Image 1 (tube, protein in one colour):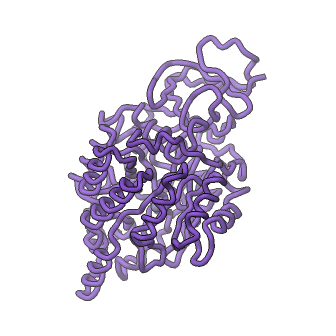
Image 2 (cartoon, rainbow, N blue to C red; image 1 turned 180 degrees about the vertical axis):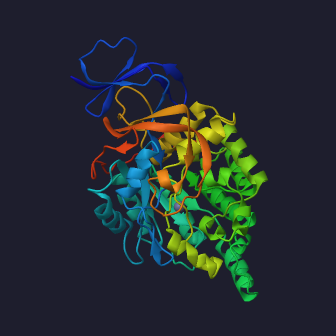
Image 3 (cartoon, helix red, strand yellow; image 1 turned 180 degrees about the horizontal axis):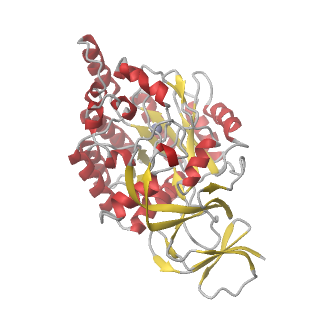
Length: 466
Ligand SMILES: [Zn+2]
């Protein structure tokens, strides 16, 4: 018997859209077509009126991340449950190298926190915080073990995770011979520190100074520096959470030069405005880079449509209301980050597709296919094809809902989009051939998610191919 037949839906990939049926068996898609005549399916899923998309990939989440003296509320179970409700079937989190330890030690420690808990497949990016003469060898070991992406922070020097230009360039050089992709958090630490100190000395501790101390200049300067180094080393570089038109311009220039540079943004940079920082509870939206202005959002939407940006991730960092409240004392005390792992699909569909800014195939590219390719999960994931993992989301494009804490599965105790009406709701999530969310209920299992070894397609190196 075949496990599932998904019948009557509109299947959408990054390049095509058609009304076809899918058969699923043993966790894989085994047949695509019409008039199924194979083994009797154990279950037929009626997908009439629904879009059938490849399960979303979130290549940027921070579950149980200790930072700013607190820890994010999503662990690998609750975080992946919230993800599943949002149609996400794979997440990539991070393993932070400890000072004096190796990147591989960090991966092992992090796997101990995730294995047996994640309910969808997951993997980890290696975060280097201490680059030295052993780093090139460590990178080789990581790539061999299926950790095909590494990250450095160009900011957060005072928090002890920043890597300087020498470290970044050493990693980019080490990456020349390896099938790997580098990732940066691009903000200029020195400019930010100067501005933070100046504001604090003047007694300016309100939330709005969070944004003013991290101006587009700080982001654009670091982005320009990183993409030039990556271009010189010819190492693919993935720039996380691009928030400003100025940083985006650096990415466009680099891509026009033929360099293998890929940019990402997040729903909050597309939909939320810096004026939130003037609210009494504005500290809730402190993240880095900060929220920007309308002109920046317009530029980001254009880039999603014309291809200058390749990915929309969430940067989920579910700091709770209590730790966010420290922002009442000073903007420097607030943990940076907001929850988002559940809401990306509805927000992007509503604000992007329903408003005519991007089409639904582009939505699939940005949230599933491109992150799968950049992270080395493709073609096993990020696609609907015979032989691919049966990771799917069924999406009702005409149902509306209101985003709120009450109907959310994210655990921060506050909701960044409270009261926002959205058009389009994920109604069923299938991961590895199992229905894990259905009719608003979680049906998956803690620990069912596997650690996925990843391999980068060498084509990623040959210029901006996504
Ligand atoms: Zn992040």
